[in-house]
Amino acid sequence: MTLTPGSTQSAPVPTPTPVHWKLVVDCADPHAQAGFWGAALAYTVEDHSALVERLLGIGAVPDELTVEVDGRRAWRDLAAVRHPGDPYEEESGTGLGRRLLFQRVPEQKAGKNRLHLDLHPGPDLRTPEVERLTELGARVLREVQEMGGEWVVMADPEGNEFCVH
Image (cartoon, rainbow, N blue to C red; front, side, top):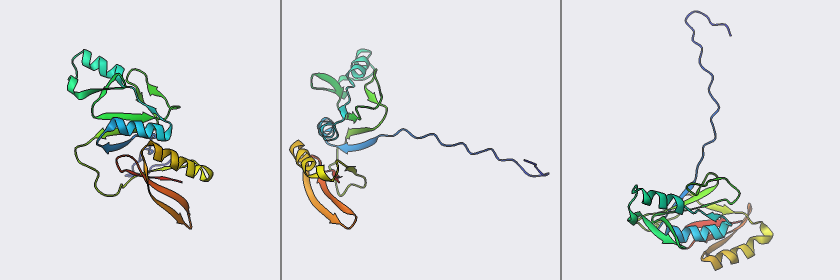
């Protein structure tokens, strides 16, 4: 590149690194939601008990921030599920890939979700999947048939909408 007097050379723009993310869901009961979504997606409910016990042991967190869930210490206001094939941090039990985090909030859900999950078991598996999810505690809100396809709009046990295609 030839520079003329008074011109400047701009640095090349670096290619962005993919951003790690998780989907956070506000809820009333994070452990119940993690149980539902873990079963619904065949995801692993994260076990943070080693981290919780370690932090309790050194006095870094008070006991009132924890609860006992399935015989293990857990965060009172947080629970998560992760894809079973994705990596996770063994020391904390925290997933490092596809993950849903449920956090307790004081207010109830109000209005329609602005973000939702679409589940794709396949057209031949839609009906049995809807039945399975209903048995887990979801409910059918409506069935949709449009030019672009068919799906079932459902709600999880706390009323968060999702679709089964």
